Length: 146
Image (cartoon, rainbow, N blue to C red):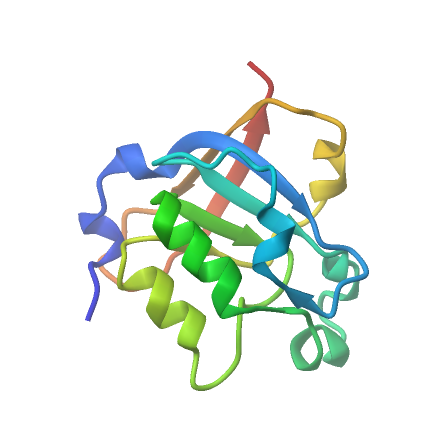
């Protein structure tokens, strides 16, 4: 019931980035955001390292899911996008999808090479999808240091 990709303001696809290092975690919990100065319009990228299994059956079957405490903190901060190096933030019945998308927080899945951002404290993210009248679209995500 949300907006089509083509109806989302282009300004939502740009923002200050934050990398959350969740490697080795079974779940992506709110405590991973402790000390992260989230603001309205920020883009949160989560590194799990699971992208290395892309196209293998385990990539799609077993991945750390985002829990409600993490999602609630993103909603509270009014971030623009959550990006992950997993196929999804959650599984059926998709409570995190509903919690975030109902608040106009976009999801970007299947990212890779987020390790390149480790140690970079300030960066901007651009994640512009093809302007399609649908509920999802391919996107090229680029992070740049100011």
